[in-house]
Image (cartoon, rainbow, N blue to C red):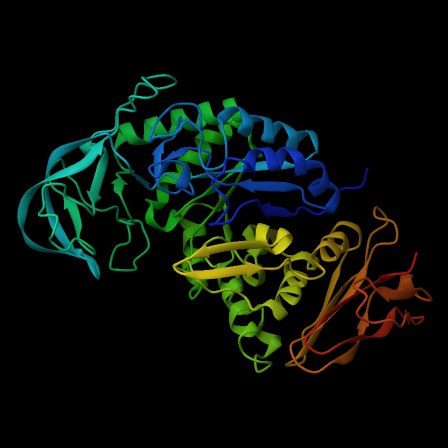
Length: 496
């Protein structure tokens, strides 16, 4: 059986319904997704969050509660119960898809008790500097998980396992607390030094910030990782907020996990810095290349190009991206839950450009593409007084099929025009009738002579997306002139 191009899907978004149906939906859809060309599912955090059924999963409360215990006023999570989660993974595996679990290690929220901790405020704009006097605060830092009562782990999280918080229970509730960050004092506490340098030091993000240099923290997270993989059988992890976590931590943690689960355990980190690809390269160096990273700079290029009204120079669409500079470790994407409308990192790619962007991540040789749930299924939600209706991206199923069936073999780039760019894939013997030519334009339509391989000489190619009705005949040297409509993409494939 011929190998198939790997394609990941982020199977959720920020506004996924909190009715507990997602795990069942994964189980029901697994076979269809695999047939469509999806080879792996990135599922949302299955762990209990501080917000109960309303928590997307990033307000982590209990790593061991996968929707099994009555905690934070619910047994199930936003997405369903523990058994439904395990059944969803089993169904994905039966359909020959991998499953990547979303993992949150940076912080904890929804503590069970407060503790008195000596702390000092830091300047929000530069966390390297303190302000005011040392003070004792009542911090929410004791996590004893009464609903779980020690099942799976009797570890209790205490104040010395954290480095800081953004809330003090003993402060006058009328006092403005937004923007206040407390750093804990004593016990040699300080922010981690190997983190992103935004705000001077970006160790602290939210809630109670874990001290990744504390030996008990590292031991418990390693113990949990072994338990989680043995319990769920997942094939890898999406690692949340890695720019805020001691860089050396995941280097060591992944070594441990791959000894336990096998060397092929996949990992991709969220280091969201769309403006500085060098920061991503530096992180890859610090972690010895042990994980992939999402290509945030490529998303930014898509966003800017889509809003430029045809004024973007398409020859630069791959500039300063991981796809261009570190393709083996680039997970490419068009959107995710943080960039969708109404989110803090809102930067949605305009609707007309999305088919072009998906052609780039799905049909080129470089990168591991990730399809976003609303782009495939559509989504409708209300937030902040706005009603958002997102339609499925036109021709996305056809682009997935083109990746599955045709996008193989050596690649030839024709990225030589400000508006009309293209590339070809020659195909392989392993994939019968494979090979393709992609042409896209952010402005007027046009055409381009491109080489698809001399063994295609005499063959006819058609537009797989149906935007162009003519057929193109490959000349004796393996070249042909392919066309594209304005503001569109055409994917030319061999006629059977």
